Amino acid sequence: MTVPRVTYAHLLTLSDEVATFEHARVATPRLEHGYCTDDVARVVVVLARDGATSEPLRDLLARSLRFLALAQDGDGRCRNRRSHDGHWSGEWTTEDCWGRLLWGAGTAAARASDESTRLGALELFERGAQVRSPWTRSMAFATLGAVEVLRRDPSHQSARDLLNDALGVLSGPWQSSAWRWPESRLTYANAALTQAYLEAAWMLGRDDHVERSLVQLKWLLEGESTLTHLSVTPVGGRGPGERGPGFDQQPIEVSALADACASAWRLTGERQWREGVEMAIGWFVGANDSGVPMYDVATGGGYDGLTQNGPNLNQGAESTLALLSTLQHARLLEGVAS
Image (cartoon, one colour):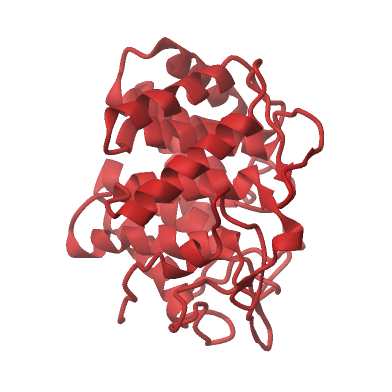
């Protein structure tokens, strides 16, 4: 398998002096759709992982963190949408945007290359960690930020408190012995729940939950793959007894599996998780249910969805960041843990 190199060219094309636009028409940013906190937090995660070594990427990381600061209220809740003319809309909330903001802030607090950026990101994390979310996925995303903070500072109490609270949410009972999942249907970013469960359990030294989370991840990976490639849950979700392939498939599902398998590989060293990362990369280069590449070689952008007839050629922020985050794990194929 030929793995494409990571290029941030299209991500920079999608970004202006404020932040990264949410949508694109093919490769052209759709200014009229504005920005969203979900995607800007994803930008922070991806750039902080790679160290944002070039000046354009350092600048984009700084702009993205400023955007997140404006998206956050004093009590830690967030707003998700800002128009191109600067108008914020929606309620202050602890939905996905809150969890993703904590994931981004925690990652930057742990991995940013300069101390001032790390300290500013830590302030965002600590403010957000004052509150909790009733939504499982939002808590999962926040957990991944808390894990990053604790890797850098194992004594950080608010991050540890968040993990303890999240473990109770993420370790919910499976629906049945055959449906090893805490929800009656798979929906979106499914593997993020199991990654967060695994990372929290490992960080807290809960071996019983570590083992259970790995069983859950194995069940999910087997259910979202064939003998040769990934066949992930489509936008309509999937429940017991439903069989694939299903369409449209979203890159976020693939990147969530890549992240979860990369975590399992780093923590256990077991080859099955490395193979999961390989399949996720393969999905983007054409080993998928439609047999087509899911990125634009010319721009470096990721396509927005896999249909039965090929890719949706729009290259928005979420899909491009899913491509980039998955390709970051290619270093695992070279024997280096992420």
